[in-house]
Every structure is written in C-alpha cells, then in structure tokens.
Length: 259
Image (tube, rainbow, N blue to C red; front, side, top):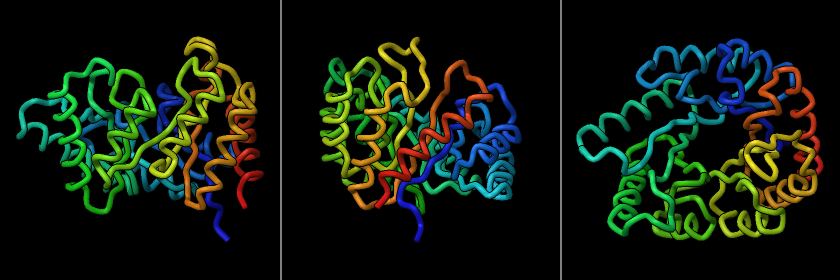
C-alpha cells in the first residue's frame, strides 16, 4: 500500500549546488521526491533543462513533486505579457514532469492590499487554474502576500474552488497558533514545507527543535486520508552534511502518523 505522506526536498535548500548533486543528496538521504525551484535549478524559459532535470530525478528513483515557480499572480499588469509568462511556467512544469506548480499570491500583504489589487490577484490566480491542463496550481503560504495569514488564505480559497495551497509554519508563531492556522486551511492543503526557524528566520534549527509541532502536523495531515508531500525547505547552515539527519527526522514523523 502506497504511503500517503511522503518526504521530499525543495531544491532551493541547496541553491548553490548543481541539480545532479541535489538529486544525489536527496537519494542518499532516502527521500521520495524533489520540488524543483525555477529560480536556479530549472531556469525560466529553459524547458530543455527542465526536461533533463526531471528525467535525471526519476532515473535516481525519485519523483518530481512540483515546479516551484516564482510567478506572482497580478504582478504583471500587461495581460499579453502575463499570459506569455504563465504559458512558459506551465510549459516548464510539463517538461519537468511535475504534477503541481507553486505560485505566489501577489505582492502585497493581505492587511494592506487595496481591494482592487486583491481582486486583480485573485482573478489572475483563477486564470492560472483554468489554463494549466493536467496541473494542480497551489499558492505558496508566505508573508507579504495574500497568503500571509490563514484567514486571508481561507478567504482566497473560498473564492477560487479550483485553487490549492501549501502550508508552512509562520515565522515566530507559537505551535498552538500555527496548528490552528493549519486546521483552518487543511482541506485545501496539497503540500507542506518543513523547517524549524524559531523564533525568527535567523534562528535556523534542526527539524526536531520543534518536534511537538512536526509530530502534530504529521498527525493532522494523516487524518485527511489524502496523499501529501512534505518537503524539507532549508536546513541549518545550508549544509549538505546534515540532510540525512533532517530527512530521517522528517520520515520518522510521517511514518509514525501514517495509518
């Protein structure tokens, strides 16, 4: 029986390394999949490279969980240019063999985004979901966007039924509040980025520094009964030597929680 919760790696964890080395590290650490970032490893506009990276990933016994694009919905004001950029993002995801593409919900914090800007962002996200055949579109759960709080993310998802989202623990948020936020969007979460930055982004600890958080997250994800990819995003010191340890911690939580 296939496991519902699978452990992976975001390639941005090792931006300075070539794709071949990232693949080798992930395979050696016993991970299941890689989310490839479009900032460095699968550059925008280079579908041939995306294809090669996808093939190399699968040849190593790993799957591609997603294309981590940096497309920001509503940021490009010219409709023709926005469509052109989005078409290239979709083409890259298909070339990579990714089932999902990660996008960003605009450029404004939810608390200060003007109503017109929010509407433009949501309209762009809706267009994305309608023009990405064979792909799931999911928003990055991140500050300074419309997904910077669970409440704002929930409102956005309620307006766009075809959209999915990622989740990650907001920086500086205590465990009980973070879990409450996850519960609020859990039915629409497709993937999770795992790290233990606490209490600020400058305090980067091993995953088990927040063991109670990640045990609870794994239990909540398993309770959905849906497949879910959970990917390590950054490790202490950006050190390749700690990936095996971090991957083991992540797998332990996921395997314990899987029914």
